Length: 308
Ligand code: GDP
Image (tube, rainbow, N blue to C red; front, side, top):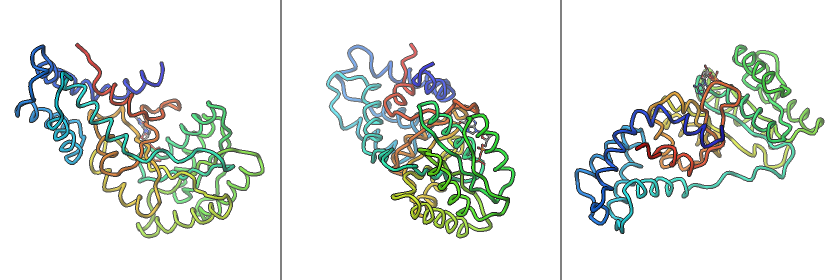
């Protein structure tokens, strides 16, 4: 199955939950004879309700509804107007940082425990390897022995080497070792799994900061990417978590894990609109191949796929 098919399958809970209602709304609004008329209040209210049910969030929903209302229809279908406005939200984001130029590229993966961070590091290693890359995994969550064991299993599945420290070792020292090993062995990426929780939030942010400083000393411009993993099933609550990491960890992009586990896949729009960060990858399952690069166009098409 291609990426489009897998994204569509990953969104199937969302579309199953909402497709009939969206289709009913669109078929009424887009019926012959209706397309030249302006949209009535009931239609706009129904659209607003459905977007909120999909977890698009209040702010992004308000913007979409206002934009659709303000636009002359000119024969366009409501379905296409909505798709256009959602695409516009994604199009306004900074693009992903340049992917290469430094060797090894250092990618820091951050996020709260349980969001899917460790799994994401394993899947990302497999994805990079499958496209010809030579990644290395670094287990810098030395606080949780179980997390290191998990990551070790993922590294084995991906067929990618892992650098790990003893339990309780200084995570920044493990990062130093991993980068040194990556340089010595000609790896093109070092993927660093970090702790998702320490005794206090301040400890955690200080630790991430120390890792950043060590990485920056060893490779120019490192970390080149800081990916924040968010759990799609947590919905809007994830946005508050995200803001904490954004201010302290210099997040450059989002990985939206467990998109397959929610009927509220509109959360990707809320993330883009509220956090103004690009979504780099989405997780669509628990297998090693279940991480796909995010494309706004494919996402919007999958979300509003015409079923009837
Ligand atoms: P961490 O504590 O953030 O490192 O989280 P883990 O990587 O251990 O993942 C927590 C749970 O979420 C595990 O049971 C994973 O199998 C599951 N998980 C992670 N990503 C996905 C995904 O994209 N889809 C689904 N369905 N489950 C996922």
